[in-house]
Image (cartoon, rainbow, N blue to C red; front, side, top):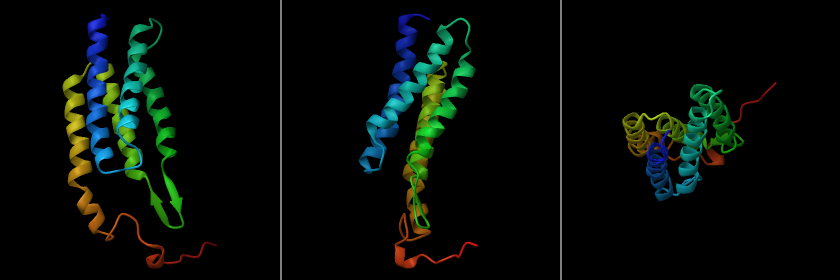
Length: 149
């Protein structure tokens, strides 16, 4: 792989991460610009490493990225009583990693289309998800008790 190809792959991951992260930062979410950009770039770097090292496979490296990012996403999910917060953040981190992985293997158009799709879901579907409960999380006074036995 030439240095120009390396920079092109890394640049695509960087751009996809910035697109997703800027929108999340603008909406003042838990994870923002730096987090999503670093997840995309880190995923890209791991996949490129799989391409560069002769005895490894980029698909095997990608599978390790998926499981590692799963743990990262699990760290942002918080439970408080019956409220669960951070699921969308975790899913968006996972998608940012997928965009970096696509960039790392050289599928730039697919990464760009994925970034537009993730951005569209986070911006277009947000009002619908809030309208079903009235807000993103229900106040404690509206929660019902369910006994566990």
